[in-house]
Image (cartoon, rainbow, N blue to C red; front, side, top):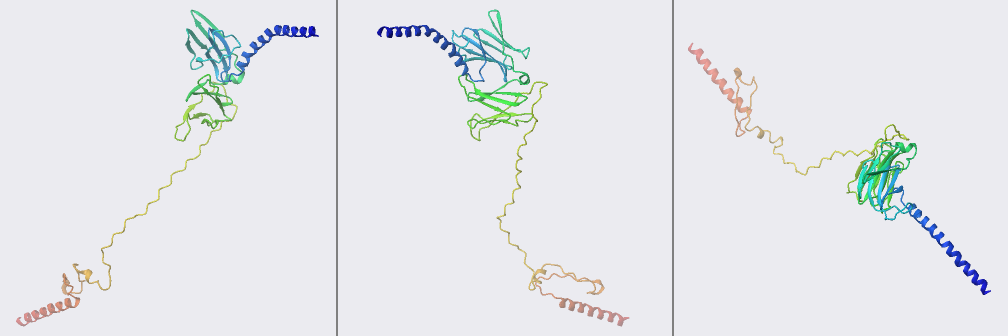
Length: 329
């Protein structure tokens, strides 16, 4: 019985020894693949070793052709994790770069088959980028990269499906991403961002690096569609809410007290007093031969009766003179 037990133990040890290299090889083969599977979609691509400790991650997705140059370990091999420190990025706006003695260039003479050329020491090698997606990708605009501040960037593109924004950290180690589209134009509450006029002819990306109403927004236009491309939806412009017109200010009530009037009201008892200092004109027919009598009454003692008596005296004197002339003749 002991002999059988010893034989079983020996067999198990021998089996483990034989299987150990196979298990180790399988683990080594699957571990890099698992690591590569954790790469965010925004940074995923085809990595190629272009120099010792330097890989180029080739991409040709909705953002357009681009290449991320990253630092890796000196013994890096295909299948290993390539999410090292970013050394440079080549795209439509920045097609050239120099890294560690390498002259890099993104060649796009043939838009359907872009490639990366690497020149070093008089030798140039070419690496084709992955094949772009079918028809819709041909109508994807160039990528407009916007610096949002606070270590964030946004990639703006335009396609037949409408505007698209992919926000991500500028540090490759930061896996934070947010995506806005025409049908989902507003970002999450943790960061203010939105696409204004998403179904219109000229959509605009708006963002704030900080919260609060007092912080001004940033704005960026989306790139235009490639020539010959059309939208898959009907263009509908947003109608901004009308601003209320300011109402006319109401006149404020006057607080000044009215000045007292200095005019004396006319009454039955002061009619004669109001005629002081005025000139009285007697109408024609009241005196003989059209004579006019004007008098200034300073003590209000002259009356119409006195005026009539004075006229009578002048009439009597005139009659006396007339009789004397007749008697002498």
